[in-house]
Length: 118
Image 1 (cartoon, rainbow, N blue to C red):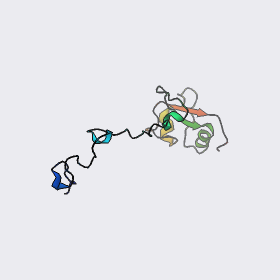
Image 2: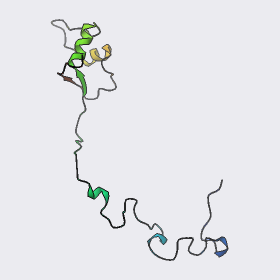
Image 3: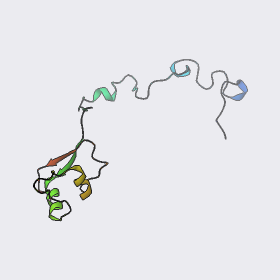
Image 4: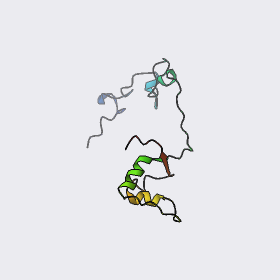
């Protein structure tokens, strides 16, 4: 396995003395050089662009479920309608009917009123 030329090993190695870095300035120093986003004194791109957006770190993403989709599953008898005196629909009922996966529901579901997707 070849690791490349060893530098700083004398003038006969062709990479001796200054090791191919030139004599002085920023890039000749150990750890020298400019950061990857430096643009030579021009105003950097991230400062030229406006600030935009906001990320809410406390947001709890909900799984959207359309009311029309629920009605379709009820019409196909895949989702049982709870009778009087029984509990309402639960997450277990929605997962068993195949409307959503248990792994995608982290913080609950949100029912959407639009019925145009039927």
